[in-house]
Image 1 (cartoon, helix red, strand yellow):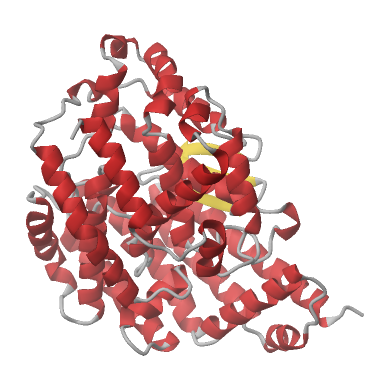
Image 2 (image 1 turned 45 degrees about the vertical axis):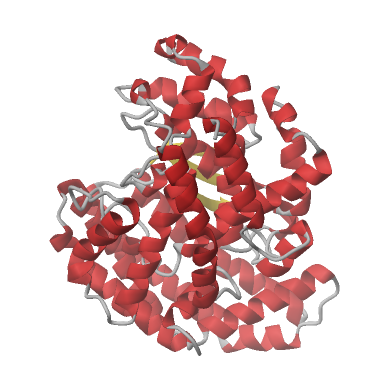
Length: 492
């Protein structure tokens, strides 16, 4: 007869299978599903989500969790994670889980159409329902300080709305000053990167770059989607997506960004596959890896000393443009409308806007129908620009359509952590640029695998970061690293 721990693990495998089935359906919806498939897909995924939820919160799951006797540190960590998940999920009625999944699937299709047609009014009723369901979810979880904390904690264990505001306050002033100093240098020409670029050549080149940094294409693949993302079916099946636009860097940096997520997922110990121990510990730590590979590696001079020749060979028109010109263009600092293509310095302003709008809607201080006006006003206030359409404004992100409310601050956390982790790695490995410039990414990947990826979700995020970097998350390394990079690039 199986003991409690063995029974619990068997149950977790069953729950994982149901959840992965839903994830595969979600991946298919965003990549290959025909447009008319959304209604049936919503039913399928909502039923699977309800089944997985009911199986996980069942009395015997809770009984096995309480009586399981760990035989290793890994078992102790597994039980701790399951207890936290049970504490959260037993507060949610099955009806709410099923209803939110169904609304999210239909919401995604409504968002795709609304974005394509610049029609926020068509999306507003769906979005209002998703905010209502998220508000109900937060009330089920409970909170002491701020309704936003209840949702944020799902994505970033232990984080609070108060900590998010403190984080934004720490970086806003120094970044605004640096943006002003760069603006005084005059505009940077990146017009040579705009135009129609061969899709097949981009696909081949982006695969070359993600393979070079260590993403295993025998255990993963890359497809296209309206909004780039990475998703995981198992340690040996990690899917990336990118998109091809009339701006060449979009696919390159989109692929490097998602490959950073993918490397993290592929780095989990295979023994943990199909259990809550596998995969990234939080969205903030996850985002630190996508931003690290996209920005600290991919936008560095060293990377393009190695990789610019390949880019020029793929697109001979770039042979007329120097490496210095290219580097300034892909690190151009200028307020823009699209978050995923924003430069490092203005990026966090995009996140602040989304955080403030989410908070206001959740608290009933802003009606969903008024989001476009609030969005445009904040873009004018923070970035000095006003979106001409809702498609380049409040309809640009996929997250709300999928019910991911309370998610956005983890992007800024990831930015801060990417520099903090980079500083710790540099202290251990020395001159990282020297490695990158010759295409030797293995020492960087091995360090990250040892320190972060192979730890999976074994340690809470705050504990992991303190262990890796020797201190809690802060803005010091981020502001210092970002300042040095851009002052050097712009000669200020």
